[in-house]
Picture 1: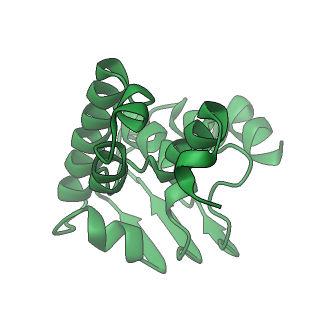
Picture 2: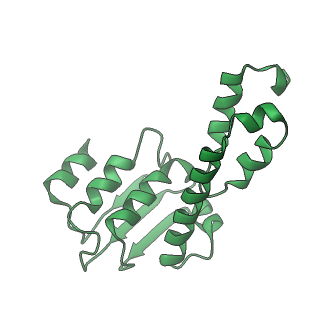
Picture 3: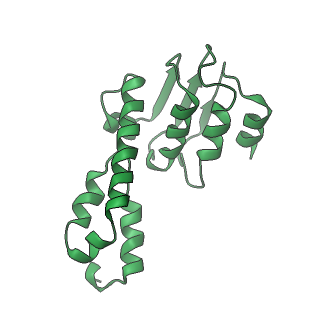
Amino acid sequence: MAFSKLSGDEQGVILGQLRNALEPRLVMYFSSANKELRALLPAAARQQLRADYEEATALCLKVGMRDCKELREATEINWCGKGLSAADLATLAKLGSVLPALVSLFLAEPSGSAGPDGVQRLAEGLVAGALPAVTFLNIGRMHVGVAGASAIAA
């Protein structure tokens, strides 16, 4: 079936699946194909996608990655002593659904820079389908707290 034959809702679902803060070009290229698709990605959505991309890029640079592609293709993340804040952990959680290759995630902040709610924000941000391939999660030497432990357990 031709894409143009799909309903607006069906086209919107497809565009929604293409939204990726680590690679925003895909949805932008796709939405520029015709007027109907452009209408499904209004200016506010494009601005939010840009903001999400800039946030993801800042996180990648902070942890020593060259670019977002490196994060998107990573099978293992070992971020120890990178000075991650609670906001950084929340950003990582938002990116969870676009990290299909990630198998191992090791986070450690001995300085406590993530604060008491960092792990909680990470756990609460990981929605269903996030980090689909992760089989190893280590949040060692981080202040987890009761709320963070409860959120991880949930």
